[in-house]
Image (cartoon, rainbow, N blue to C red; front, side):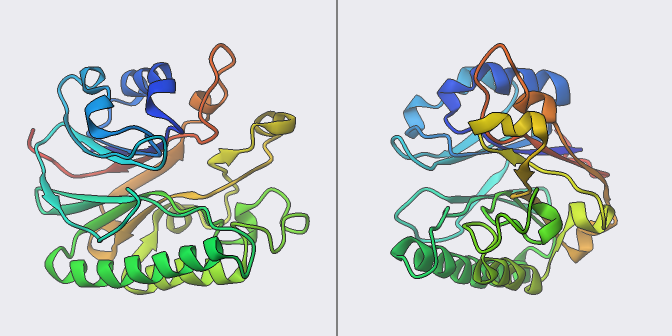
Length: 255
């Protein structure tokens, strides 16, 4: 089973990238963030053979889960912005998130981000009681450790590396989740996002801010997590600034 997470930075602008991803990886579950469209404008025709669950928003945010197997929608949080959605497929809860970007310490967006993490962590702790097998994927907008940043000295105390942000992400892990990539590859340096400016992707000057988190009962079933950099490095069409992240699991959805 393949679960793929991808911040598309506008689904209607990335149809070629998503189409290529579907053909390259053939995911069983595809979680998209920052689709930037309302539900009725989502390109459902692109996802032949998938059940698509969409929580859109005009021009900003928005998440979607597309699954080969039919799922049961699970409410995650009350929210003004479309940032979370959940679907139970078999006995696994899949949660797709697009965390707030935040801003410099002390600003309203900084506090919004920290509060969002507190609310989300509390809700996930509650959901684990009903769904002990849970997978959270998406764009968390936090580089958890210095090894997740191309230059931790230059970027120290900037948005995405602030200690308060890292503590907020760690609090989510402490309710019962594991950073699967880091569990499999403790020392590997791998980024998932590269700024469009200054050719950052070609210099590999990026951040790891897209994650696959799993609850303890699922960890043994995960065999690999990898980043599809080819989708980010497209020269013919403007790509998203994120690359897809793929999680390979030994699990049968039964579709």
